[in-house]
Length: 293
Length: 342
Image (cartoon, rainbow over all chains, first blue to last red; front, top):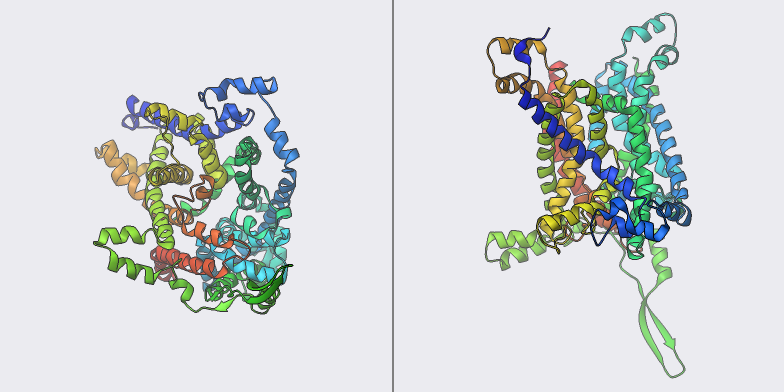
């Protein structure tokens, strides 16, 4: 039952509605605009005349015969072999997610069930590690990696990203395992299971919601990384985002800026679709640590 | 859980963090005390049909041998920290003596590479953190007032600026503010100035970067505040209403205190994230007008044939110290609350 005084006056509702509308446009319009523009030629998307050229595309029609063109995509994916960095990104992302989750679930479970003081210290250390920008560690990696001759290889970047991602994964999964009743695995222990059997038989079947949430954030770490991949991977093992950064200098000079636009859209569209499917999980992952304070 | 079982479960995760986070910090500290080798010169006699002359050249073989023997370079102690690319003590002393007043001196000091980056990084953090927290708070309040049916869509679109990698997000905006892009050309019309370019002046570049940062960090703040708003105790709200509290009073005395803890958390996380600003500077091609601590480190590692490990390491250590100072109040609070519980 709602008290009548709880009603919000009409003008305030309208104000809120207008404000939300402005915000949604600010947040989403740049993406819609760039996705649309990636099917035009440069003379339209970066028009000397009027920005409305990007809408009706006179130059695109003149140059290619249609109002939309795949020229930029063809140029970047085939001529510039963007499929290679795309493949590397897939390898890195899948491996980072799988390894992060394996290490994170074991560690997070242990932290949630330990009860000793050192568990707190590990979590605090993880928090401090989480605050450290990746780039400050890069100069620490390069020299040893050169010496060990593991610089430039995909597994090196994968394990570094896993390690950098561990603090957040540990915190998230530790919080999630705390929300699973202790009785569940403790009754398995009473029935004569070892700790690992209890984990396997009682916890693994119910842990998937938390693991999927943590998995999305691990995926994003691997997929979005720029600094680590740019510094640690050699040219032929490069992933997509450093590749786009490397593009920028060259395409601007050769008047092929639409290649960079098409590459950017190719990278963000999978993310936009990912959010569509996993919105609830992303939100729950973001709020997991925060709301409890 | 017994110690041994705990150790078995946590070992892989802890080992990964130890080898790739803790040890590299040691490695960074070590490298910051070293500097690149001096170039070994050799006398080379070159003869053409007419004459012979000797010149001094770099001896590549000797350099390779030396680098293989001492990969970190030669010992420099704290020299890298105080050189002109970092804390620049000599330069500051000179500027101090030569400047007529404090403002001129400060102005000249912030032109030194390290202080320039430090100033931008702090300015970015100091502007973007409060701006995104305020904006995110109002978006959360507003979304809380719209029908439940469309909230999901609003949350979906709100997530996009945060989910998209910073480099790409900033590139997308960079193309739009280009003088031939939609925002850039509209601004030219709006201000009736066909030469207006957001990339031209340092002030406009800074404003652009700050706006980008706010756009990028608001979604997270909004999501957290919005979730927290759903847990505001209704009983207290209704009791306040029965007592005759106005709408504003309710926000001030019930909602705001409820959100206070969340706000502290947001300040901590936002400061941490904003302080590492870096990709936006590359995305906006803003290196000429702005540099952050992270971008200075990255440039050192990307410079020429031999990365400037020592210089990058020294900047890294000073960045880590800054972050430790920024975080110390909240770590202290976590510690005190843990002690109170124990």
